[in-house]
Image 1 (tube, one colour):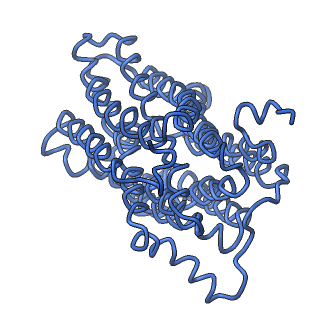
Image 2: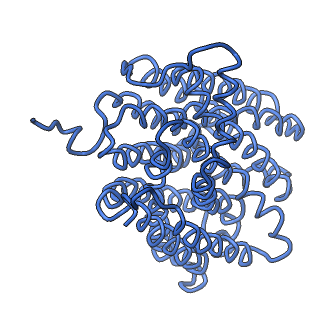
Length: 411
């Protein structure tokens, strides 16, 4: 049987347009991630208020992420993705158009939180589609490609595009362009993508659909390893969402401008998306669990500390700080096999397992800023970084207990 280019690289051909759509949509969503906190603080918010805004945003992302998988099972992937698009557009228009110009903090909390419901329903629901449409032997690579386009849009293209756009059209107009990118991404994912190989809807009425939704909760009791996987997934990207709240100010103390910080942040996740693919292959070859423990947990724990201390150790040398950050970003991809491991823990109800995985992906958006908000005044930036590193080492320990029947793919 002749293999196509798509087969060789592990990208499901029948979902190629949707992968492109996720990339573009997430670029629009990631426009403000690297600079919104210092921008709001410059305009008069306190660091605690900024952390509070991102924490509220993270709460809605976590809720939306949790139920994205089971909603996709109950109502269909495309319907769930479209609902995410609508919420994203409503939240963006309310935040940028109504609350941000006058810095109306209560309204900012509400509209930015509404925006937070959007991208998990749009992007994470797609993981259920992958779980059903991708061949089992290539699932690690298929989810590797998902995290490649997801992170490539959110953290790489979003950062580079915003560093270019802010200087030319200003902060507010840059935020408005996210509407265009979201609509373009949705066109590729929902209109041009024709693959029908998905779990469309659950048969039956409201009672059956509610039962399906509750599986996103009950599965953690029925299969405790799914719960452990969810906790490890939270730890995976907590630092990613904590860093932008306080690191730009810390880097500024060593002479880094906002543009230089965005270039570092964008390059970190350029390395990350490349290694998302590499660790998808590595996980399929040497074992999903080993990859998560050693590259993800232990590797990220060490490089989190290295990244923080690199400006001090190098007297603010741009390239040394960049190198330390890139190393952290590369090893962050060591968690990619978790997206293959968790659905494989269950024979059925893969949507419920993916929902717990997605909850773990959504919670860091809340947990990261919350850690900064709670501990920054108590222990400073240095103490916060040690907390984040400690979480990585704890996650590596937990992963030892996430085993499949027969230890398949975890040996």
